[in-house]
Length: 536
RNA sequence: GCCCUCGUAGUUCAACGGAUAGAACAUGGGUUUUCUAAACCUAAAAUAAAGGUUCGAUUCCUUUCGAGGGCACCA
Image (cartoon, rainbow, N blue to C red):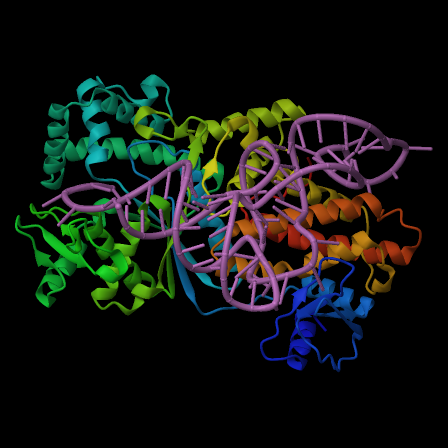
């Protein structure tokens, strides 16, 4: 019998509304449920039941319990779920390199995708590249004016950093005249002016080359890439239809508007309804125009059961509008769209400002931490994997809604509650398993010590945490679990020798426990996109 | 002005409405002839304030204070 089956059997015997909880505190039972007076549980694996503080505590016969948990982990069965989930994340602009905020976004998306995959969903990961618009023209204009034909190669710069350099230069030199030139450039771009298109292509290709390097280094992956320049016109037909249906209307100046209802959005200061522009008077798209189109395209391409947008909290209002308009247009799938909003990353001196170059650059961050690892532990091997593990773990640990106050020295620790700590616990486990052989029939009644029991209980909550983490779209919950698991193992490792235990039966029972731990820890690290190392 | 989010040890973060609010870092004290000490053990330290709902509130509701974000042709 597996642990999940035990839980189901017990649940059958309880009230309908009862929820079972695995107890991690040894004083209580193995499972507990609140508020039950009647404890007639008729299952032969139950040792005793006891009511403490109005909790019904259920004690299960230890060998059966341990075997059920460990066996379930060893006999990995893959669940399948027919639901399809799409996740959009990263979505960079092509006018500057990636910074630590992008990393937070990307790792949130990647990890959530992995969590849903582990639960059996069919998942597609989408990157929507913001490759057009005024902000893109800014770096183009600066390069055109002052670039003197230099290239990333001629300056020895990573190509996306090269582009970012011109974006910062534009911002520093910006004047009303320059701003007008940017508008003019965008107009030419939309009219497919050859020269401008050629410049745009050249510069975007540089950026992509740089992004690719960063993706590869940090492990960011996608199943599908949409380019804004190719799809930004899609929304216009929807706008036309919406006007005919009376959902949108033309403003005095010829722009197209949508009225936001008072109930959900409140009123303006003067008591009028809030409005939002869906198309400019000159018929060019605003973000909303293209997002209406892209949302449709996504549904056509994927027929999703859930569409998740990983985008910062500064766009909460925007997404509320977008989803409301989609619903008003009659798309049934509108309610399956979800904005995963996450907090900003702040520097000690305040908000990051790309325009001023005040950012924690993604590439530099990885390089810095990697150097730190090499220096601190005097090693070359695996230093990148360890540095990335520290960064990813740190960014994922904090629940999405929280802002992160980033401090280079303090934030990316290498010891304590960190990625490397978790990697290290797996290294230790694998090192034991390498030296031993597992026999077929372990005797789990040999596992009696406190640290053994805590580790087993910790292992037993894996699926539960995974499920909760998915339901709340919170990878932080799972990241914390991975740490707690590593901690339980390190404590076990310290107090319970495996290969040098007193008798062969204890050795085997503990080996099975180590094996089960290594399986879950490997899964856990893979979900967090952290490398499983054999040596550290 | 209005709307949204957040306020937990010195610091950075946890806690499905449930049992004694957990960690990490920093600080103090310890552990290596034993499977990797990037580890383990140990001490001290917190729910912004005031009300309410509840058998029970860090969690839900109201108010105040504080921080951040947003509110029609920006992304």
